Image (tube, rainbow, N blue to C red; front, side, top):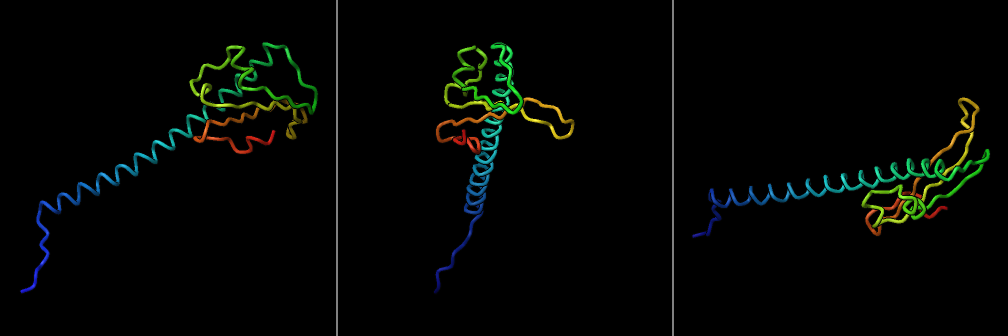
Length: 128
């Protein structure tokens, strides 16, 4: 007589529960990662806005074609950064006075770069 494997309702239920847990975990992890990246992107935008305020507070003007680097620590010293990520990250904002091809006028362009331990780094962070 051959031994036959019999799948009972209890075993089937257990398999379904395990699969639901595995799929739920995978979905939860991917949602968590996308939210995390979004937080860092928002922090970058906040730094760009803070750098604009920094220029106004310091009464700094950039000549045509000039570039200036404002560090995260400079922004913190001025009390412009309140985001909790500032304690976990290093970074800077590059402000450049570039010509806008559409209207042939110079305008300030703000690009922020942050590095937050091994969790997030802006592309081209070490370029400047």
